[in-house]
Image (tube, rainbow, N blue to C red):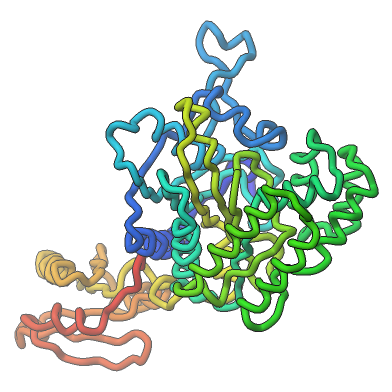
Amino acid sequence: MPEHTRPARGMRDFLPEDVRRRDYVIDVVRDVYRRYGFEPLETPALENIETLTGKYGDEGNKLMFKVLRRGEHEASGETDLALRYDLTVPLARVVAEHRGKLPRLFRRYQIQPVWRADRPARGRFREFYQCDADAIGSRSPVIEAELCAAVCDVLLTLGFREFSLRLNHRGLLRGLLDEARVPGTLHDQALVALDKLDKIGRSGVRQDMAARGIPAGACDRLLDVFARGGPAGLPEPEAANAGVLAHVTQHVGGHAEGLAAIADLREIVRLCAVTSARPYVIIDPSLARGLSYYTGAIMEVAVADLPGSLGGGGRYDGLIGMFLGENIPACGFSLGLERLLVVMAERNMFPPGVQASGADVMVTLFEGEPAEEALRLGADLRAARVRAEVYPDPDKLGKQFKYAAGRGIRYVLVMGADERARQAVTVKNMETGEQTSVPRSEVAAHLAAFVRHAPGA
């Protein structure tokens, strides 16, 4: 492939089959989020640079796509804008800007692309979509329970079964870090390293922490705590979670914030027990999540035999206050569309209709026959919500059938002179080869009864 025809590194073109799959997943996510009362929101691709910087920690600042000043300021090499890094910080800005127009308890979902100057890898891109749901205005653990349930409903609807929703708390992590005698100034560094535990293992985290200046003794004490309790626990989630909480309680001692976090986790799990999330929520004290704006409970989806996660989130009660000057409670979850698509494609999880052609039916056109009749038939089919394509060029019937077969079109309609004389249409099922004569006045309803689409198909 010539270099000049390729998209930029880490970016992709989406061909029709790709878009159909994306639309299917987005429609499922949107439908579930709406059933939980979340409202739609969109924000600009570009944000002012000061809006984004300082919200994601040092590593986040390095991965932003920054935009140089333009016009007479171009030669300065300064930046004033940046591409959206996530959907949470723009949400916080929107809440601060439009607080008077929004309800006191504001639930929003947002499905838009974000950009990160990351190193491209399998399932990791520089431009990718996030599917966010956030609730603003309440500190109640009911929020966390409903977010966990909504995420589980999305995954179950898409066909996932072997997954867990890992749950932890920043307050518990701070308690464990303090009790392990990690200096307070190095807490963020320790969490960044700890967030890689499932990717690089215990020895990798130990090396990373050493490089970040964290004492070896403190590192070992932390890793000893996390040696027990994670997604692989006892079969019953209640028993597994109770065991993990008992284990970490021994390690936080009398640390007030750590004990409060344990109580918070216990309540979230209790509430999740009456939702669809019950079998999937597992407390994992090693879960860190690297973004610095999290303040309370944190969550992440893990899928069996899959490194990394399909998404994550948590409580960020201080973020909106950076824009507004007062703290407003907030909690959210973000599913990664690209990761979902990669896993679903590898595991053949898409319904057949999603992967089919853009049309269910093709209307043939004969040499010397009036094109108007084919166009009328196509219009009638579309009015009955049947996806129909009219073959544009008068051609041999065999060639038209071959085209339809190559496109995966399920039915081909023939309306030549003989059919018109009988006021009928010949319907050929391209999968079975069966041909049926259907009255012209009934053909649209006849096909509509056979064609049913999944969301997004």
